[in-house]
Each structure stands twice: as C-alpha cells, then as structure tokens.
Length: 254
Ligand SMILES: [Zn+2]
Image (tube, rainbow, N blue to C red):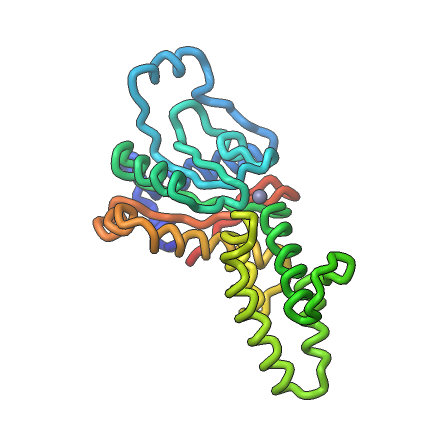
C-alpha cells in the first residue's frame, strides 16, 4: 500500500496520493515549527458555509496532544476527523467514516495512532491484572503483575514445552475474558496487545504499530461500504503513527 501511495501521480484532481503527500508536507512543516496555517482565515470559513469537500478522512486518538489538523498543518475543510480514545472503532465511528467515503468522496483514509498512547497502556495494565488472576486465582490488585512479568514467570519454568503450553493457555484465557472487560477501550484495544504478544512484540512502540494494523483490519472487516470503495479503487487506507518526540508522522505499510 505504501508503494501505491508514493506514486508520483499528482497532476490531476486531488488523488489519494497527492493528498497524502500534501499532508506529509504539512507534518514536516509542523515538526520544523514552520507551519503556514493555511485555510484558517475568515474568507475560507465563508467559502465553506454551504458545503465541504475534504480530500481525506482521519481516524485518530482523542489524546489532547494529537490533534490531526494541527500536526498536519491543515485548515478548514481539509480533513474529516473522527477521534476516539485509542482510535477504537464502534458503530458511530463506522457510520462517520462511511459517510466520509460515500457522501463526501474522500479518497484517502488515515488511521493515525501515536507514541505514548494511554489507551494502549490501560489495555496492557488491565490484561496484566487479568493474567495475574488467571495464573494465581487471586483478584487482589496488590498481587497484580504486568502482563510481561506474568509471561516472564511462565518462561522461567524449567520445561520449555510446559512453558509454551502455559503461555498458550494464558493467551487463550485472556482472549476469552476480554469480551467481559468493563471498559470498551480494554475490550477493543486488548486484542491488539495480545496479537503483539503472540508475535513476541512487547515494546510499547511495536504494540502501538500492531494496534494500527489491527484497527485497519477491523475497519475493513466490519464495513461493507469501505470494502466496496477499496474494491472500486476509490479509496486508499494508510496506517500512520505520530511520534511526540519528533513531531513527525511515521508511515506504516501493511
Ligand atoms: Zn492515544
């Protein structure tokens, strides 16, 4: 998908490619402190009173440090933004994105995760509590370990096969327990965390990347209109991760 994205076909109407290049250029300006703040004046506001025609839709985290219009140095009418904690998907998010694709005809959909995402940290923490209960049968939060340390304990078992079996059993138990988690954030982000752990990825940044990929899979899986737009080549979906350290957006390809 990334290869398609960077074809230099920018001469005609705003295509997904040219839109994405423009957003990335805006992000570079933002990271360098050279924002132009274009299309934020009152003439632009007045020109958009009767209609909007954004080129891109963005699904991003609600985190106050990650406003997409600012980090892409975008203006009024530029992007149709949907934000939830951990960019989780529910029916309202699906309906909003489908509206952007089918009614506003956006050709680019950006799924934007970010560094230090609290929703992912919360899901990891909650999975640690659940894992402690599964392993020790104790629901006291004082004995709760992190998911990583529960797995470390399992890995420290002498018998490699028994450790692998115990880990598989733990992951299966957690998958079964997740749908009952109270917080929708934990229910919806937890599977991404488990998917990362199953792939031996424990670094927070890797888990954030897995969550972005998982979110795209989930979105395509659940939305027939988005499947159709992809099949008709009316839409490109891009995964990206905003790094607070640098101000830059990391482009992920799937
Ligand atoms: Zn976040």
